[in-house]
Image 1 (spheres, one colour):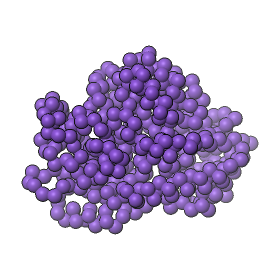
Image 2 (cartoon, one colour):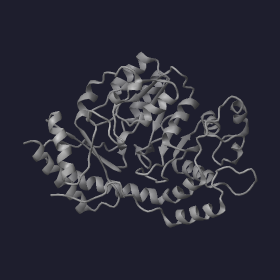
Image 3 (cartoon, helix red, strand yellow):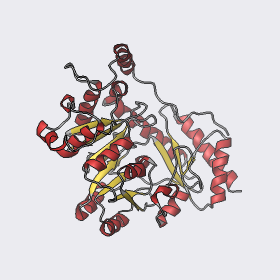
Image 4 (cartoon, one colour):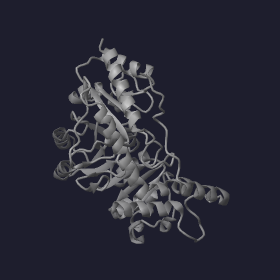
Length: 397
């Protein structure tokens, strides 16, 4: 069986976003800051609306989630040479943010369900003296946030969440991004709200928020932010905080604002519906292991991951090829070379010597990944499962 599906296909931008974007282009007012008074900019409105949606006090919009993570680290006091903990199962912008801050990554192993190994986290927090944990909710898999927060508190580690894959998700009713000192979200295409590119940093901390606004490139126009601390907080920071020019523009904000709120909640429900369709269609397939999702994890499944058990590297390589021959282009975290968006810690040689992560070596070697665009029907998910089953049969011969 073969399929013809574009798993990168996005939903169209809502009409309101298109109309506002066109009006902005006619006006030419694409920069978020203006030196003459007037109504709040699209970016300021987006920040206020997103902060309200999450129940956070402050939100700062940046040009990417990677920039948001870098700024969150800097605003939390991370200095060059400091150790920063991070789970090893993540994508390149996470270690990139640590490197951007001049910090030293200390990678934490992964559990069989793709979440951070909490025992390893505790051991490395104690041994490394790390100031921060940059926790990646990689591909929407959320670890036990109660336990993670306790480990961070016990060791004096500041928690910063990478929520690129968890906008709209929660752990035990509490939204991701609100568990630590800052949370960082993505507005990149293929994520939950599509601005093409962009990031949102949320925090309840006055000093993190003020520094983030200044780092982002507000100049002395920070009063035009709606979701910001009082002027007195900026007085502490405005003379000592560099301008990194990491702003987002009004056009991106106008495109993404109509995708929040009820639209986002509807998308989250439809993504999870497609996840469950594919999960059910793969039930009982030989060698396929799909982790059980705990009840406390209110995930948003814009992608699907599974492991290929009882197989060697050659079998996995043949499996990827057999899927591709049938029209299904699947990502493999065990590949020897980085490809497209997919890489692992052994590829990030700017770290120095690769760190030893015994369970990650086993788990990521057999881990596969595919997007779940909202255009997929139940029949499409059944067809994808059939391709995967056939490809396993071929690869195992």
